[in-house]
Image (cartoon, rainbow, N blue to C red):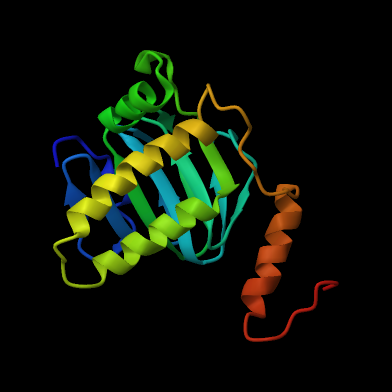
Length: 208
């Protein structure tokens, strides 16, 4: 790996598998424990995708409304972002994808025929993105088995595909806004999550 990664943000979490590393991408499979993710200056682009669990995420500076985290919910942190402290209320299994800055720059130049310096990824939280979830699940499975000769080929293709997808959906040049989940006021969302967590072994009706 030839680029810095701000993994100290996740020091309070539990690493579930050994990291996967290539020259332009690092993959970490972690259990984010209840507590706080440290504030950090992002040294690369990071995509965090929830794979299991449910929790409420609260940004300490009020940048975003509280987000109900569940499988498939993703967060994008662009390179250079001054990210604030985030509170996680319950354990969440997450796949962290760290992309080197050169990945998005190359994709912008090759796929869009524009000056890469004009492309800026937009900090986004609480998006439901099936493609990111499928990629994250594939990397989770890769990390849980023995290495195979095709892993590098998959990683190189995935990094290019991710760059194109992020630029097309979550950048200042994208043609359509990201699809975010409908949100409730924070106090109502917390009541819903508290109910589910206290009665997870029971059948809870929609009206409840």
